[in-house]
Image (cartoon, rainbow, N blue to C red; front, side, top):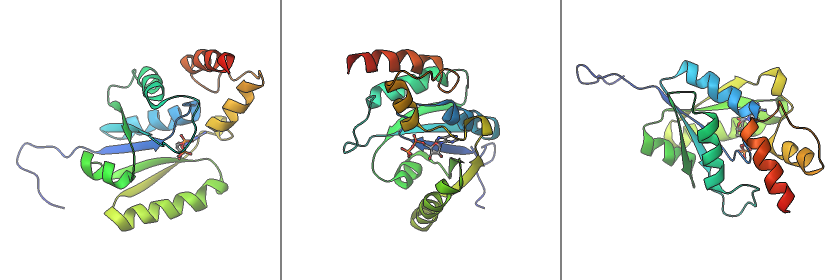
Length: 169
Ligand code: ADP
């Protein structure tokens, strides 16, 4: 490992990437645990112009900012294109991902190996909290759309915004 100038500290900065459309308690659990392990966590919201989302990037960033405000070392950013380029530009050496089930594994492993191959960016997997292992943003949207109760599965600011957004459609 290269030596740093005297008096400097190496910052262990990681990224939690995703669409977060909307953020769920499963995402928040991973972000919070990462914040306990690393110096800095950047939550990176994917700008995907080809994918239809319920919430705009600005809205997703705003909600994430609100629900992660209690962590002093979590910052919310947006990115598009290759995650490894975002990592290189921001001095991030590792991606933190939650693994819900075996079904997540194959795709995540492929992506992790590609990211390492491209830029030596490591991927660290955390097993999901069993309370939230069945949760995904798309399932939350489906349940809420048909009037199901999603309290306890997403943070309160999301419940209010889901209600308002779905009332418009
Ligand atoms: P994507 O659009 O890439 O699927 P998501 O916003 O749905 O992104 O999720 C981002 C990441 O958050 C996932 O890749 C996964 O690592 C993690 N994640 C999603 N849902 C959960 C959950 N219920 N528990 C733990 N981790 C989760």
